Length: 227
Ligand SMILES: [Zn+2]
Image (cartoon, rainbow, N blue to C red):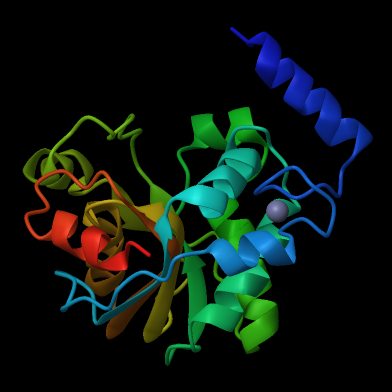
């Protein structure tokens, strides 16, 4: 059921379509003050299943707010501001094409767009790379994973993706996602791409969640980031 505060928020979005998705103020879809408040995600060791991974920010504050506006308030254009900031924040990794993490058909129908694909289009424009948005498909709905731990997520998404062409995937793929937690979804995508002939699979994402199940050293990372 739509809550009254959500309804009010959607009304505001209609009346002020350019208001900042981070703070609600003026100054663009992601205002300079919110951009300055984004906390960089600390560099990490190799991500299992991927040849490389770039995450721009901790999933917190303005980026959390902006992703909420993009996905749940369906403010599609927020992806432009987020994509531009992401392209400016991480260097273009070596890749032949961008592949957005697909949404299940049911979710796509509900939301009207795939937020990862919107981000990929913006990144593609900035980095001069083509997009392959239809080759990788989600075979079944993996449901909401928020309450699952790392091992359960791996089981939940294993085999959930398939490359359906036409033709083989690009040799060097750059997967694009909005927010990741354990990385299990990206690893499952990479597996499907490699099975179909991709040689290298890297990934880029806006942010990584603070509530990572099973993350042992994560509290330390977050603590070291406190101002
Ligand atoms: Zn703002």
